[in-house]
Length: 262
Ligand code: ADP
Picture 1 (spheres, rainbow, N blue to C red):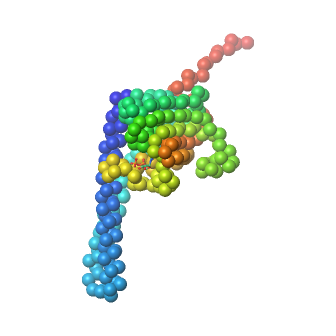
Picture 2 (cartoon, protein in one colour):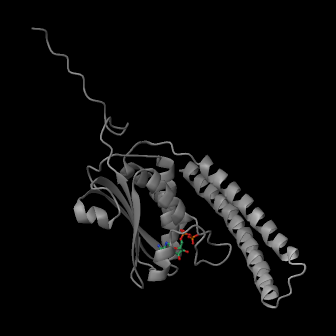
Picture 3 (spheres, rainbow, N blue to C red):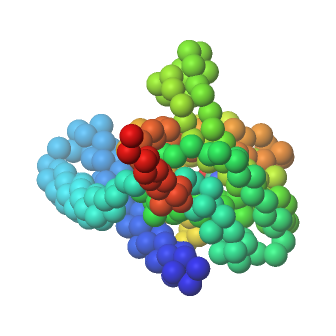
């Protein structure tokens, strides 16, 4: 659990790094926008001399923004997935103490772990990061305290239900993080997965948490869904496909039975 805490600190550093990038990116966009605005004014006034200044300035800023994006993508690619048969129950149970320390004593943490939870094939570190991220979002949505629930379940989605969740019909392991916080107005819920979209004060939010979770879920063959009601709270559910096959170390290996020879 010391390692988990380290992981949390590392994520905070990552958040600061990406937050810094987002800020720089935004400044560059503001510059491009400003240059285009001036260019437009000059063109509409018919003053067409010396327009290169504005064009070059916008182009320079666009190139620097592209370089920033490449850095960010290179960073994201380094977080390669290392999928393993994983049963999220153990992972969630092992995180409880660290999550409680992270969200603070004002928030009541509850875990509802389905017995007989199926396996899924995913990178356990990324799943852990995703859950921690969701818990931090839940904490931020409950400044006056509240209840935070981590719930796992086996889910069989068919026909309309699968389509509604934008998933193939089939069997999924679901990990949901629910809070009794502020909830999201529809316009926020709509943009919540957008990279760099944040409603948090500068320096506190990077707007990358949910977009990274979305990327992880999609790469693992799954999906993320948000249910939120203003004033009631939010539940974010990660659906991951069921993995059939050899069990992980949590399940004892099959017993060898030696039959007496006939
Ligand atoms: P960040 O947390 O850095 O803002 P995220 O991508 O994790 O980035 O979240 C984007 C936005 O979605 C948040 O700024 C917030 O407005 C909203 N949001 C996310 N989780 C919750 C939640 N549990 N309750 C209310 N709003 C949330």
